[in-house]
Structure formats: structure tokens, C-alpha cells
Amino acid sequence: MQKELIVLADGCFDPLHSGHIEHLKAASKLGSHLIVNTNPDSIIWKKRPKVGPFLTKNNRKALLETLPFIDKVTSMRTVQVLEKFRPDIYIQGMDWKEKLPKKEIEMCEKLNIKIHYSNIRTNSSTKILDRFLKQYQKINHIEKKDFYDKG
Image (cartoon, rainbow, N blue to C red; front, side):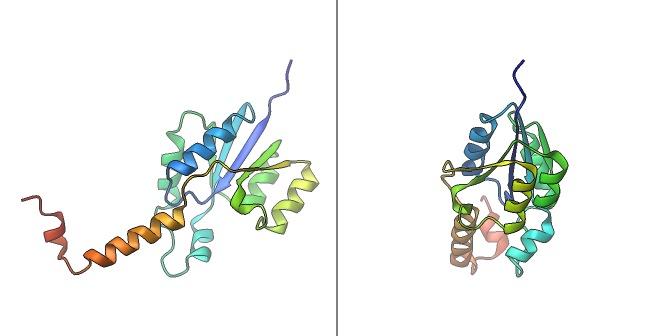
């Protein structure tokens, strides 16, 4: 009997976009079970202290749970989820190759978890939010009721 392989994908997923979905699909093919961890809101507040999360943790979890190739969705600090689930493979996007926190690398080494970097992502939450803000600034002078008026 072949050993089941657990894969852990981790990120903010704020907002969830097509690049994330392609990344997670690829992750699901690396093993027999895919666990996805969406970082707690407190992590996003640290990354974006002036605006915080675009979607709350519960909203991100609910969206991720609709994807049929994901077996489990959690929301905790990455080191905690690595220690709790002890996956065989921890996958991150290639953009994290030189930026992965030392604590995560050390935990993976301690638990013999293989770190895999995927170059699948074709989108970026930061770029999406930047485009949104630029568009919002262009229409900011329009009254809300005029913007949504269909008549």
C-alpha cells in the first residue's frame, strides 16, 4: 500500500484570486491530502497596518472550503499548523523562495518536512489591490449613489 502524502499550502489569500486557485490545484497534485492554512487576520494587520484584511479570516476560509480539491482549511500561525499537522510537503509560491521566515524553515527541518516552491501563480493580491485603489481614486469624486445608479 502506498503511503498517503499530506501537503500543506499556506498564505493570506486576501483576496483569493485565480493565481491562488491554480497554485492550490498544483499543490493538490503533489500528494493525497491538501491542507490549506489561511493566516489569521493579525498577520495581515502586520503586513498592511493601515488597512488590514480585505476579507476576514472567516470569509477567506469559507471561500477556500468551496474548492473541491482542498481537504481541510485552517487558520493559525504557520509554525503552529506545521507542528500540528506535520505534512510531508510544505508548498509556497516561488516569490517566497528567499523570504520564507527562519522559524518556518527550522520547523520543517525539525519535522523532516520537504519545502516545495511552486511557480504556478499568475496573479498577485498586492497587484490586484493596487489596481483597485487606483480605480477607486479615479472614481472617488463620484457620489456613491451615482456610481451604483443603474438608471
